[in-house]
Amino acid sequence: MQILLILHNLFRWLILLFAFWTLFTAISGISAKREYTKSDGRANFFFMLGMDIQFLIGMILYFSGVWFERLKHLGENMKDPMLRFFTLEHGFLMIIAWILVHIGRATVKKAPTSQAKFKKTLVFFGIALLLILIAIPWPFREAVARPWFRWF
Image 1: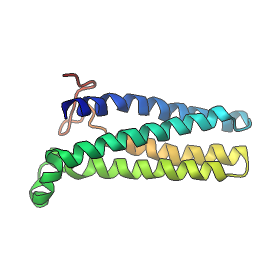
Image 2 (image 1 turned 30 degrees about the horizontal axis):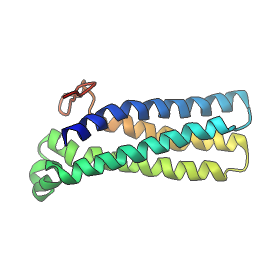
Image 3 (image 1 turned 90 degrees about the horizontal axis):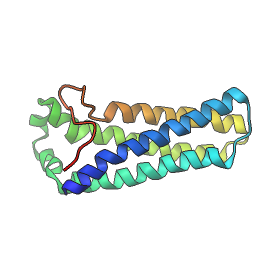
């Protein structure tokens, strides 16, 4: 199980890279008023794929670890910021971000014009990235801090 936690921790960097790549292509597409290309679609596809893999690893960790068991004592967990974060907040925000990425990808594919595709990309994937950044237990977040990189 420790290896899954390490993978989950390291994989966040790939997701952040794909998220910023996706937003960069959207912003550059809007500002340059250029056509939506396969490369633009590939950026948000890799973001979605990374989110899917991370979601799968996260669900395995959650349901096979101690966090799922802590749901039995939910009232007590709400009093402790760390327990509340890992029992509810982290997963809830990440699931919303995952849903936004999937809805965003489908919406972008159906948009009629390149500018509409870029704008929808910016909205859906931008909100998803914001939720992801909020839900990551960064080292500077006092109550829920985790190291930048978690090794064995």
